[in-house]
Image (tube, rainbow, N blue to C red; front, side):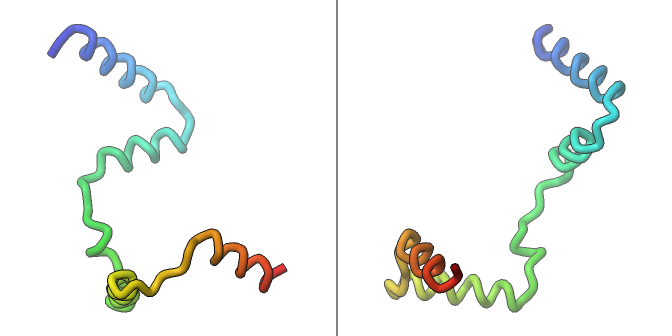
Length: 77
């Protein structure tokens, strides 16, 4: 590793040792967690809903986003 990378790593460790910001710690913890496939965390019902949506898209059953938002805003003032 080059000296610049080592220096940056030391700076990060020093910053983390001093920080009292819980949000920073949580973000670092999330970065260091092993990567997980969100699909495995979904319920079977959620997976079925996603599969249905993908199938509908393949069949051309879709609505333009701007039209959807406009319709929604008209019906939910």
